[in-house]
Image (tube, rainbow, N blue to C red; front, side):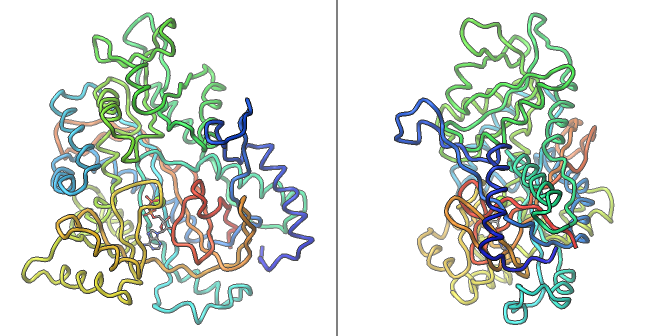
Length: 516
Ligand code: ADP
Ligand code: MG
C-alpha cells in the first residue's frame, strides 16, 4: 500500500469506520470515574490513538526482529540469574538512584530469606527503530510523501536498532492486536487498498505464557484452595482495555483459569498473606475462602512513587512467596537502561549466551551507549562524554536516560547540557547516554483524541517474547529453559517531531505495519 495524502472525504470515510471499530472492540482508554468531575455512575472511555492507514515498514527487518527474539529471551533469562554480575552494576547504581536502591534492598532481603520457587515466567518486549546510518538523512529524504524507489532502498539499507528491552509490565499487546485486526477489516471492506499486514498473536501468546506458568506451578499446596493468577495493577487504571482481555481469555480456556486483580501496595498487604509453606494466599474479601496464587503477573510496581513503605512491603511479600513471579525482582532490574548499556561493553554478551551467532546478531542491534560515571585519568570515553554533554550541538545526537520505565523520563538532544547542570556531579551516574537512532521518516496518517496528523512519521516495532525457566544452582549458572518463543508484536508510530513514545500518555499511536 503506497500511502499518500488523504483528501478530506476519504479521511472522513475512514474515520467513520475506524471509530466504530475501535469503540466496538475496546480500542479505548478508560477515564475512571475518580478522574472526572462528572457525577455519573458510569465510567467514560475514548478511542486510543491509532494510525488511520497502516504505515509502511520493511518485511526484511520485521522478520529479522521476530527471528532474534529467542536469543533476547535467552540473554535476559541468563542475566536475571546472574546476581553477582547484576550486583556489580545495580548496587552502585542504587547508591545514586533512590528507586533502584529500594528495589535492590528488596532483593537483598529476598536473598537472605531464600527463594522457595525456582521457576520464573517472562513476558518481555524488545523495542526497535530503523537506523539509517548516514549523519544527515533529512535533506536527502525530504520526499517521504512519494515513497520512491530511492527512499525504499534507503529504508531497506537501514539497520534494526534496539531502543530498549522491557522485562517488566510489558503493555500494548492487546491494543496492537486490535489495531491490526481493524486494518485487516478495513482492507476486506475495500476502505483501505490491499496491503500485506502480518498476523499478530500477542494477546493469545501472553495468555498462553501465563497458562503454562500456572500449570507448571502444579496443584495448590493448601489442599482446600483453588489456584489462580494474581495481576497487580495501578489504581485508577486508564489502560484496562490492554489488561482485561487477558483475564477474559484465561477464563475461556478449558479448564478455565481465574485471574484476580489487586492494586499494587496497600491492597496486596490487605488481601494477601503467606501460608506455612510460603504459598501466597489471596483473599478477595474477609469472608471468602482464600485462593492460592500460582503466578504473580506484575502490571504495576514500576513507578518510583509506588514504593512507599507499603509498596516495599508488598513487593517483598510477593517476591518471597512460592508463587511464580512474572517477573522476579531480578528480572525486573535486568531491564534497567543501565544493564542495557553494560551489555554493549565488549565481551559481556559472551558471558550470557552460548552461541557466537547469537552474540553477533544481538550486538548488531545495539546503539553505542555510555555510562555517565565521572571520568578518571586516561578514560577516553569519559572525556568524550564530558565534551558531548557540555555542548548543545554535540548533544543533539544523544538521549540521556535514567533507569525508569513508562515514558516521560528521558532527556533528548540539546536539552541535555542544561539538564545536567541541575544534577550534582556525583548523581550523574544514574543516567546513561545513548546515541540517537535516525529512522527515515515515512508518510503516515494518525488520529488521536487531540487531532489528526498527516505527514512524516517514524515507527517503533516491539517484539514480544515469552519464556519459562528454572533457576539452577548458584549465581551465574545458566538457567534451564523450559519454554521460550516469540509472542507477537506491537507497532507504534508518531510524528517525526515527537521524541517520546507512550500511546497511553499521548505520544504516538498504535499502528500495524504494511510490509514491503
Ligand atoms: P521508556 O522506558 O520511557 O519507554 P525508552 O528508552 O523506550 O524509555 O524511550 C522512550 C522513547 O524515546 C522511545 O520509545 C523512543 O521513541 C525514544 N527513544 C529512546 N531512545 C532513543 C534513541 N536512542 N534514539 C531515538 N529515539 C529514542
Ligand atoms: Mg520504551
